[in-house]
Length: 266
Image: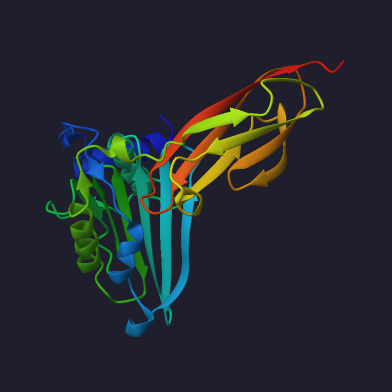
């Protein structure tokens, strides 16, 4: 067993992670306009300086992170919100990752309040507070350093916001495009192909973010537009371009593929 596996096993035993009840319906989850959290987060009026507010579709399909950072004097506060479009299991995996993927020689987390989300953990260290919890398809981390403020009241406020935005069918709110088309289904090495995403909602181009990911060594990036991308063929074979669509408000995400057959140059 390597060091990382040992840390995970030790953490799960320490906090009783494997005793968390399974979720009965994985399609029940939080569908919210996460911009609404701004009213709950630190503000200039309370002496805080916003440092960043970033939305990041991560490598794994269906996983999106929104991260806020704030400073006040020497103190710092960070809120990370991971939203999963494919159910609660990976949100729970994220909690484990948040607790164990660090440079500390030991896991600093203990079990958190039972009434916070479905499962929570926290650090007992007063000078460096961190709280992580899961609720349906969402994992939230709040971390402060040298602020001398408790993080639990903010965690409770965010939890209340999530509870007010639970939907029975998350799958009905996913940002699926109307269709994905290619300019040519069969082309030759050295030629270019355009992949285009056709969105259903007229408001979608401003709200939905499209990202194209071609296979390495097969297709090279050309000109990329908000809903289309041009790629140059590098070698023969079947190529699939991953097309990720992220709803910037709900942080829900879908992935489809555009396929191109590449023939040798003549």
